[in-house]
Length: 289
Image 1 (cartoon, rainbow, N blue to C red):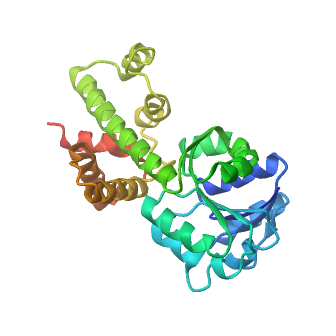
Image 2 (cartoon, rainbow, N blue to C red):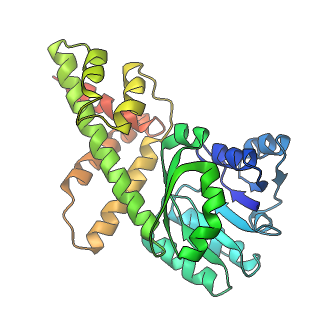
């Protein structure tokens, strides 16, 4: 399939590479040209502009930081809306507000452009390995068209519901991950302060009810104090902020999400916003007496 791809960051670049490895023909665009040049050396074509990335392709994928970025790229003054041909399948794999997915989708539909919101879970390691969990919102027909692309990037892909459902699901996913990281960090501090070996604790509990993907992927970073970003603190703050905004509109009380959001904001204010979100452990280190 011919695919346009906009956004070649920590997640987007390995996702694009996996599409190419699986035989898809890519046309790529990114603000930073280093990633574009790398993919061109692997056989991709460089798009001249955002609009150009949507021309001559069967599908367009975006992997962008937040809601305003998606809105601007797709329906802004010189966005894809003003360039793409009718029938294009647009797949937004960014994590944004569900209401923005619906807004953008409605605008695109007026020009006959089909849209799925399909955010992912699995972090940079999942993006590199092609084992992402993909949660999609849209029609069954559009989802079926996207399956060959999803299979190249992920190990699972689920149509959650209509447009916007993918990002609602992703908000839930990242709320759960945040809560999991918080209690994991709190528990590990308890063990460290008591003099118990953390590696032995992790080996003891990983096969029981406390075992999780978070435990497996994030405890090595905590034990090695390796907080190079797979998923940045500031991006997790953005997702939790979007979850709280969505919950507020639904008149929900979300105390755990608010609490962990506060912890992450404190780390960000201390200059750790670009570190991996597993650095939440350092919040507990800083506050342990």
